[in-house]
Image (cartoon, rainbow, N blue to C red; front, side, top):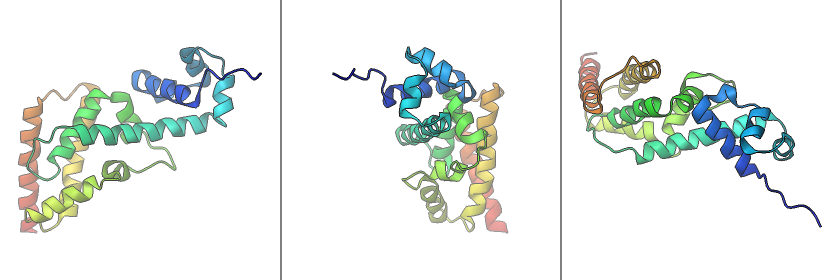
Length: 187
């Protein structure tokens, strides 16, 4: 009778994902995953061809995790890009290592920042349509200006240099959006 597998693909992926959240993606090695999962490296390479395949699975899980995070994040703002910005900044603050993996560290063949943000739900497209409905003449330019600001704030939270409250952040995002929209109307 064949021995029952006790270490599954899902267990290995969950372990590597948890390690990424806690310690950072660069610390996800076969030996460390095996130690954390309580097994040898053999089960890892039984279910994954190599570490690149496991790392890709962790990355994909992180991208889905961000989509779920965004979809559950409370909607407080009225201005275009304010809710997406609030969720993005909070994600950077609460999930530092996942944020770095998805939005800071560049790896060839992975999704672009825009693809992750837009997700399967069309999050960015929705915000661009909100901007159009609000009278913005160049919603693409508004997105770019807002995103430079939002990404900067999120990155500042990684280093501990961003200490605004959620209400202060929302107010800043909404004021910035208003100023950027006024600027696009003048152009």
